[in-house]
Image 1: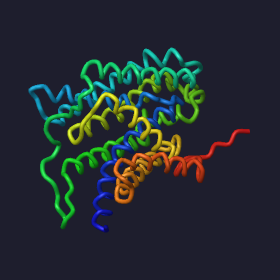
Image 2: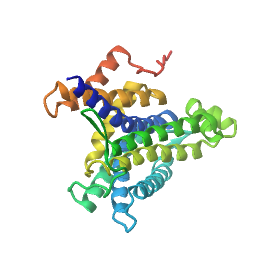
Image 3: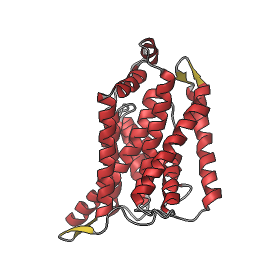
Length: 294
């Protein structure tokens, strides 16, 4: 039992890194643009299938496929923000209800386009990010999953440093706090919105590209990952980047460890239960701030 607990906790930590990265992207977009991006999981799907396509080229390195997928999703996120969301922007703010409906429609369009092009079959990027496994007693951990965890943590750390220490990062935070005041200080809210949506989409896309060498992708995967992203954001707290990262690891560990006690397939209920419990006990999330309106 103890060995199982350690093993599934380790697996949960490796999965939690991707959940945290996915939640960071969704939280960034909402925190700055106030857009509930229902198509966030489809950006992950787009990243996964972009990596799969690039993996079919003569350059078969999974790292090349991941880098190319990140570029595709970044450009895709920029175009969505420029062509679809900016027309909905009034006085520096995207209309919340219209933004929600637009991203919902976008999620259906992307998912069905991928289904029409690639078909319903499961696919993955050929090759591995790292060969072999580490063995500690009876505990076996794939090097590939450890590389995915390290890459997720490194990307999250770079994002935090970018937001905290660069002028552009500070501008993003300023627009998130008060777009009117930021614009009065000479910050282009329009450009920050474009950058923010592209950056949030990139985080989703790199999550999808990272998992495809280790697992299979399918056209409908975006919906479940959108639910994971929302679960992470609600548990961690809306607008809290550190909260999203912490919640990603908590969700990954809880979902993985639950396999020990729950019947096969029932671990999918762990996320919704944690989310519901958080809404009851602490509605603002682990590290979120409770906003009070007069």
